Length: 479
Ligand code: GLN
Image (tube, rainbow, N blue to C red):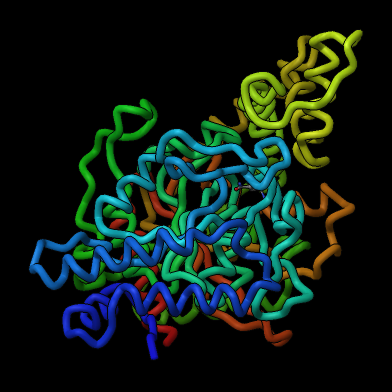
């Protein structure tokens, strides 16, 4: 029977003839079928995945050079475009919308031989922390089906957790890859802002959005990153920096590192005591192993969530103005005597879900004249202070250690009527997006309630090799 542990091992199985790409795809198609109740995939590209797998198997026989991701079965969050396939941001607004191009990241996967198995459920327009804001209904956590998988890349996380694909691509604007990875007990990685092209990623808040990777292990993340990162003529915010050989670099001999942690984070009222203790124990273990771990004060903690929600909703109100019922997606029926404004209003009111509407309204408010300086400008100033603080910390430390989320996965419905409580679940993840540094959540712990939770690591801009190396080291030490 087909068994997946990591890409390297899968490639060994392929080259020794123990398995084939077709066998791998069949295995995942059956697993997806058997886990339908989790509501992970919005659409499965069954025939196409099998056909691609057969071609890839034939290529092995002819001895052609193989791609780095030959036969790797990948799922895409329903915000990442794939030419001639539907993409909807799990929104009523984009039902039946077909993309006319592929995201750069998608194209790079395909160029290296990956097989795209389907698109995955998520919070509408990537807005949410529980995957309950989806036009397709909520996703269930495979560990406990009464609980949320986290969001917004909930489907992408459960797909890896439940063994429905090898790797998923999600998007992380404020934690949407790391938080569901934490809730599902897998690895979730967000690169530096500008490391991966955003071309073909449906925009939520453009100065925060990054494509992220969800996988079982750090080695697979490193290999996929190596493939999808890099300069792109279609995205001027992506860095021209060369792409390091991440998969090779993480194998280098680990060093003794200097870690910082925020006192205010570990003392935070909302932080589950058991999670706090697990992180503290981990800090003690690192110190015992000869690393330096020191507390750093972070007086800005109470401001990160408000700053994040002001800036991202402002950007969202602008980005989502294109969905007007005329150019894209859903169009409401209006009566003959009604005018264009009514068409806009009805299309947007009927096409968008409640959370997206709330954010468009909030974003429009903080940008409106009279309030702009009090909210938007102020939040930009806080963002600047956070960047200065980040530079100061990373001039002295290799990485910051923190919990990923204050609690383990909550019950479906538990927070869906209280947006502010839901927003506070993002308190430890939004910082990395506000300042643009890379961050990863690794599944090191199990709570006494039986649920998994992770440890989050952040490092300086474009120091992914170091971040992945440290993450790999900590994962290995724990096992
Ligand atoms: N939970 C956060 C939000 O709702 C993060 C979303 C994301 O990273 N896409 O904005």
